[in-house]
Length: 103
Image (tube, rainbow, N blue to C red):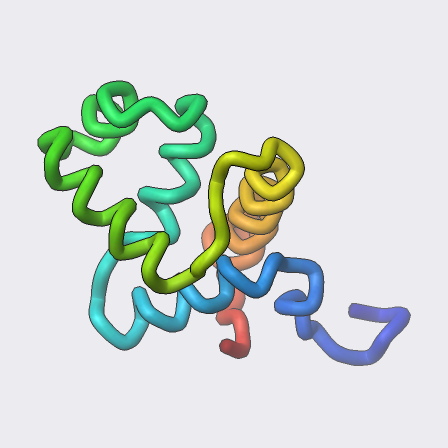
C-alpha cells in the first residue's frame, strides 16, 4: 500500500474469486467460502459437507452454481492452487485487516 499509494488488493486475486465475491454480496450467499473449503478438502464433497455443516447435495448444488458463475474447470491443479491463494488473500484482507475490498 505504501509503495503503490492504493490498497487495490483485488489485482492480486484470481478474477473468478472476484466474481464469486460479487455474487455473494449481491445474493447474500457463501459460495466463495464453499469453494475455498472444497479446494482445501481436496475436492471432496463429503469432507466439504462435513466441514461446512451442510448436506452433500447442498454442496453439490452450490458447486454447480459456482461452475456456472466462474466457468472454469477445477480439474487443473494450477488453477486450484491460484484459487486457494486468492481466497487466502481475500480472507486475510477482510477478516484480519478488517478492510473492505473494492469489488
